[in-house]
Length: 119
Image (cartoon, rainbow, N blue to C red; front, side, top):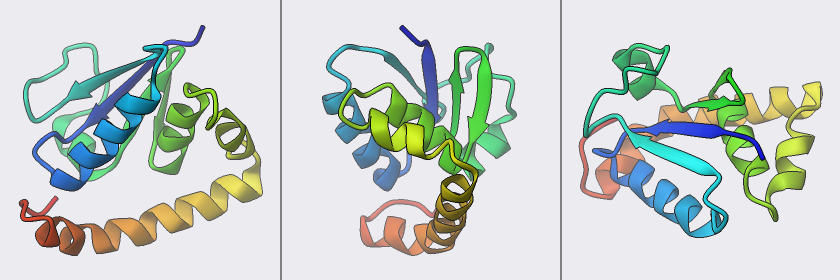
């Protein structure tokens, strides 16, 4: 069984919704979700500003960010596992990262619509 830690911004309403959904899907409890807005994680190798800027995950000791961090999370959930495996392919990984960067440009507006602070 893989060990997976996800760091997320619990002050961001969009992030909270995504993580709440993933918690429901993580029925086997394979993912440790750490809210960086609530407290610091001394085991995290990434500084707080970077954690707030992009999504991060550590899977079996390996650090991922952006689209690959989402793919690591998908691999921990049985019915999303195939998508996480596909995301390992270079062309798929590249396309997912482009989509993630596009999402990051829209994120402040989406958060605003949800009544939260800009991320």
